[in-house]
Structures are given as structure tokens and as C-alpha cells.
Image 1: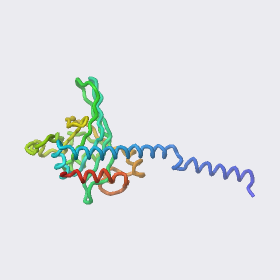
Image 2 (image 1 turned 90 degrees about the vertical axis):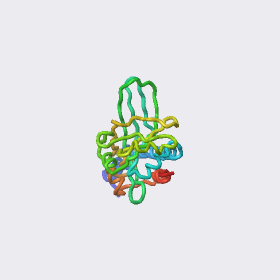
Image 3 (image 1 turned 60 degrees about the vertical axis):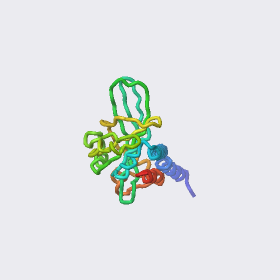
Image 4 (image 1 turned 120 degrees about the vertical axis):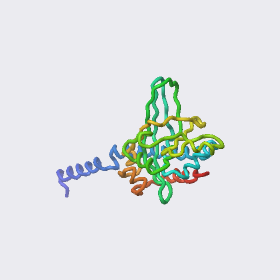
Length: 236
């Protein structure tokens, strides 16, 4: 028979378990909400890849994608400016592996500029990482485009084969679309930073971007459509 003291102890212990339970904690709820938001990012990146693949102006991008060692996709690079401007957006880094495209690691891309800029603009950006040097540079905690890897704007338009020599030797090729049209977005000087907490929330455990890309340390079925879109876009 439980005494009043034993009953209070049991109730208190049960309440304590509820308080420390990771499933009922505000932190876990926040992590689930972040994971849902990042799934939206991954779905948006898949749409961006499909748009580039279907756009005849980016035939060169599709050819170069087939040779790339990695890719960085930013579904929405926002540019809000009036005299002092800035760009920023979340992006996904994927690497080519022996079994196809890797799981994506979540990053942010940001830059600032000063000039006579008025208005706001949203662009879709794909950076093709043409060698291991470029992939390794981004896998550092913070990477500045143009500092440790050269960046060139990939040629845009129909019949661009003659222009491909302009980007020979570049570590990274940049392609962008704005309001459905081909656009030139200056990315040199932009800083790309890994979002470790967001990767942890999405995959359910901690893993460095290098482990996500190359070691198959984590996985999420929500990434399969993006990886398939990249494979289908190559040389399309």
C-alpha cells in the first residue's frame, strides 16, 4: 500500500521524466519545426534544379554539371538594397560520390555591397564546383568565394559552345536566374557558412558536412527527389 510520501515521490519522479523527455521538450519541438523548414528548402532546391534543366539558355550548365565534383544550390538569394545592399540565402551543398549525388548539407550564403542599387530582387543560383579543391574549400567552416577558389560566370544562351573557353580553369562556375530569366549575380566575395545546428535538426544527429557528403553518416528520405533531379539534369 502506497503511503502519502511514496505517492508524492512517485508523482514527482513521473513529472520529472516528462520534463526531461526530449520528445516533450521545447527544444525538440523547435528542432522538428526547423527540420520541416529545411525540408521546404530542399524541396525548393529540387524545383530550382528542374527549372535550370528545362531552360534552354542553360545548356552549358547542364554539360558542366555532368563534369562537376559538387554543386551548391541556392533556391532564393535575396537582394534588398538602397545605396547599401546585401545578398543572402540558404543553400545546399552536395558532392558527387561513387554512388551518385550525396546527401545535402545545409549552408547559408551572404554578401554585402555598396552602390547605387534600388529595389529588391530574388535570384536562383547554382554554383558548380568543378574540382575537389572547390568542394574542400566550402567544407571548411567558413569560405569566401574568390579567395581560395576562382569563380567565373558560366556562359548563358543558345549556342554558347564557342564561349566555353572563357571559363576554362575556373574552380567554380556560377549560373543564376531572376524572375524566370537568365541573370548575372555577382557572387565573388560572398561568404558560405555551414549551419551545423540545422543539419543536426534535419538529420536527427550531429554530423560534419564532410561526413554528410562522403561518409554517409546520416540520411533522410526527403532528399531523394533533389538528388534524382541533379542526376537527370546532367547533360540533358
